[in-house]
Amino acid sequence: MEDILIPIVAIVVPVLSAFGIVYIIYSARHRERMSMIDKGLTPETFRSDPEPHKTLRNGLLWMGIGIGLMLGWLFKEHVMNPTDEGGSVLPPLVGAAIFGGLSQVLYYLKFRNMRSE
Image 1 (cartoon, rainbow, N blue to C red):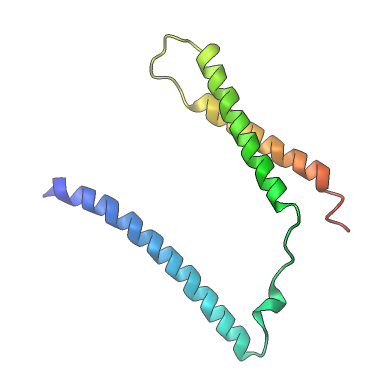
Image 2: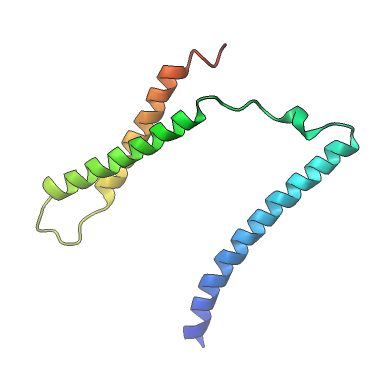
């Protein structure tokens, strides 16, 4: 019985959890908008202006993560013990975190003065 129950639970629980989270988000948004309409407000009043450099920021982040993964993999392959068959995923992940964070710092340094305008 456990051989069948475990895979079913392992599939059903994450799917139902994801569905529940999406349902709660959309129902809360709907209730919020209906409440605003009842008070005579329009939802467009509270929308924030789009961030003009959001795509650049996200692009820099993903480029930094990619470069970090690549350099971490190269470090693992060529610097660490090459006879280790199992290998470690730690160097690529550390590289991704470092270069992803570095890309965010560079973005901040480049555009910090533009936000005050």
